[in-house]
Amino acid sequence: MGFCLLNNVALAAQYLIHEFGAKRIAILDIDLHHGNGTQDIFYERDDVLFISTHQYPLYPFTGFLEEMGAGKGQGLNANLPLPPMSGNHAFSAATDELILPLLDRFAPEMLLISAGMDAHWADPLGHLILSAAGYGEVIGRFTAWADAHCAGRIALFLEGGYDLEGGSSCATAAVAALLGQPFTDPVGPAPYREKGDWRVVLEHAKGLWQLE
Ligand SMILES: [Zn+2]
Image (cartoon, rainbow, N blue to C red):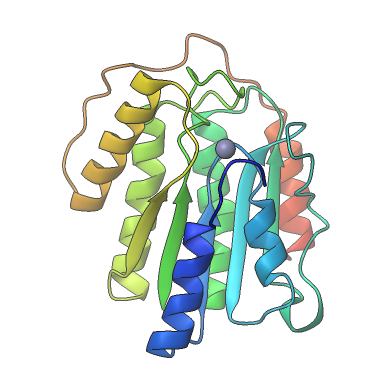
């Protein structure tokens, strides 16, 4: 909503289903913002699992934990609204404790990632204070998951990112992670202290998704 004319990742998912007969596609949205368009498109469908991590409160002010899909899509829409000043540790824990278990449960044939880089600490639009190395770390684990569970079928889609150095370092980290190559972060970690408020949200999410 507002930033894109076409939803690239949704088009890709639909293309895989329509042209290749895919039955289960997972879309993981790690952009700073809630993926409200992607959620809306697949909200009542059982062939696409949508997971979005995002800062809340922040535009577009959607993406609540309780939005879990409807109709045939019930239980296939997961949101993790993270408070400002969550950082690398929050994303690492969310990956281990929520995202990968939900992927295990759904068993997608391909993993598509809305790889917005605007959760980087230098980005002017938000305060999720990830570092490029933090992006690389979680993308490396998504890559390993795809290698182990869906024949390495993973694709990243560039989305938000409004600080040129932060965005380009995150993109480099992402490519290095896909290739299993080492990455040296030219921008470095956030010069702010992470807050731990995200733990409460993650525990609530795990309760809703019965991942205790
Ligand atoms: Zn964004």
